[in-house]
Amino acid sequence: MNLRPPLPPFSLESALRKVQAAEDAWNTRDPERVALAYTEDTEWRNRSEFLRGREQVVGFLRRKWAREHDYRLRKELWAAAGNRIAVRFEYEFHDDSGQWWRAYGNENWEFDADGLMQRRFASINDLRITESERRLLWPRPAP
Image 1 (spheres, rainbow, N blue to C red):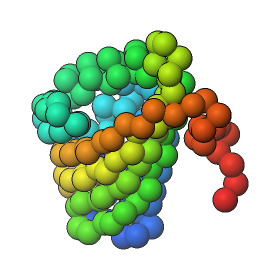
Image 2: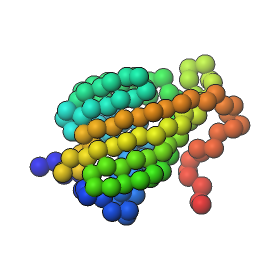
Image 3: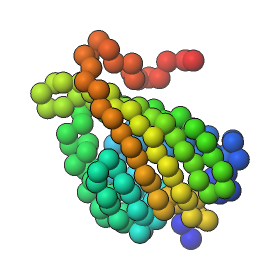
Image 4: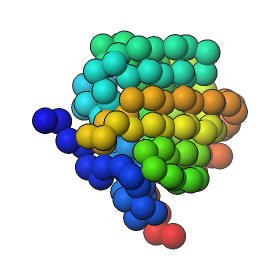
């Protein structure tokens, strides 16, 4: 079995743990590690790109992080019910030319009984920023 706790149905506490685990994993920028949180036949929509299965997810993440340098992400729980979680997020990175970007978006997640994400639908908008406008600096500042 490939259990990925916390498992659905999600409480507020378990949904918060699931969101934090996702943020932590994505901030490693390790495509293989990140992909282990998804079912073998996971379905994704990321902007206008549609992916199916872990292999496509790994390829997507490799391409993403090859061009998004110094990537930093924050996720925030928006809602949770049953086996679904909605999050809002923002991330920052710079491209090969040194231009900094902040991306904002929402994701809808659906999990199987083992706690693996079977569906991820992301809507994302990009904003050009200057380096001095960055706010996702690490280590994360205390609230």
